[in-house]
Length: 139
Image 1: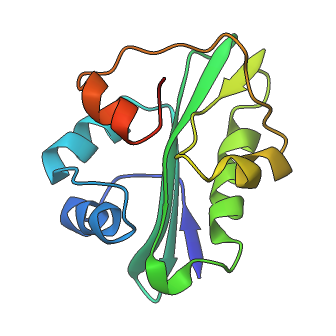
Image 2: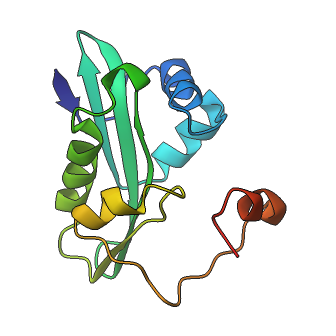
């Protein structure tokens, strides 16, 4: 397996498919190219040239970093690869006063084991608040 932190040459169709089958929802290749392009850090894992795990971090360089879109191919889940993606992104965001993420409902324990703690005051505005509420992301 080989790690990359560079999106040059990334097959955006393969990344889009990875999000779809993981399942983390439908994200077009164009959408992913834009959000990864605006992110400061990326962690991409390949197995014999096949993209099997990915994640990104938005960061301002000092105060706040936000981990997003952590994904692992279903055939590779349960092997600690998601943990490795998170650890690489956290390491690349060291020096920030805070590193944030929001977890899919039911995944909170996974992130707690990696040092993340629930926040009492985190709030969000979602483009589709009804969908965010029905999926358990917001009250």
